[in-house]
Image 1 (cartoon, rainbow, N blue to C red):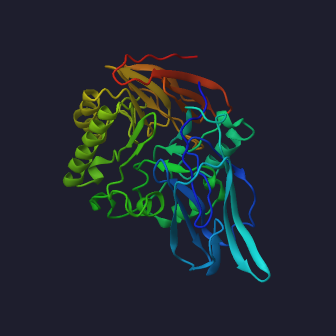
Image 2 (cartoon, one colour):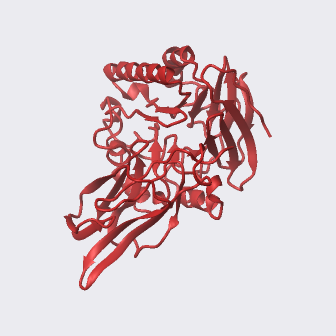
Image 3 (cartoon, rainbow, N blue to C red):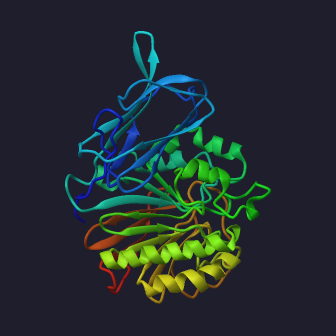
Length: 401
């Protein structure tokens, strides 16, 4: 495929810095430890040109972010700093500095550099699911990409839900977000069923889970938990597939929002990748049927078919599985870093490929010609490959290795 063409950059408050959503968020440059942070700094992909830096301190500190002026930051408050578009720079560093006698002390530093070989047309991103708060999940992801050349490394990470085990309990989020490893890539995260668990009133909340919204959404994002991104070569729509955690009004609002986004994609000629948590087709007997799946088949899939959407990404089933029906590829990403084998007894007549032995992740490359997917197990073995022409309305095909 071709190299990168479109680039999206982050700037600090007083100096130009770039964030390439198409490039590599590289390994840490170094910092002085986690003693300053209750929630370690991490990035959310806020839009195709912006990222949100989030963190919470253990103590009141005077900080400078990205070379900006020193300001007071209080302990016990979750901060959200929007880093927006600026001039394209080949590399930069996101840096947090603490005011100290005689100068400034760096307490967090992350190098961000372009990937994909200069000015080209290719975007690279990775997809995982169902980490369930496992300690080895994000360090394992970092190790998987360690040492790989920029053109093989993701610029951002899509997580398809169940990022923690008990999302209704704040301690689950603190255990996850207190770790440095989560700061490797800007994140886009779908809402999973476990992200609601542990909250007594979660079923009646009518919105996305309380702590999920706090930590994995921006303050002005939709209450229901859905998101969209208009990249140069495709549109990504991320739904909240926990439909019956939402009240009826928000379920209908999500469908109206989805149809509007699909209509805009058709007008702009962009192919659409749809993503959510619950798998429509699965060979895992415990995950093959539910009210959510019935709702997807009855209300959501017909809408996607009307707008020629041909790729749907999901998690939930804890097994990598790719199915094909009526022009749509259904890709269940599997789990990453979470132990527990699925029970493969359900019948799935649309299955084209299945793999259930180890954790799996997918790497996507999108350019002006195609959407390419390669799926690997945790040992780095290629287990599946899919290539889809990116023209809207074209006949899609797949190739397996």
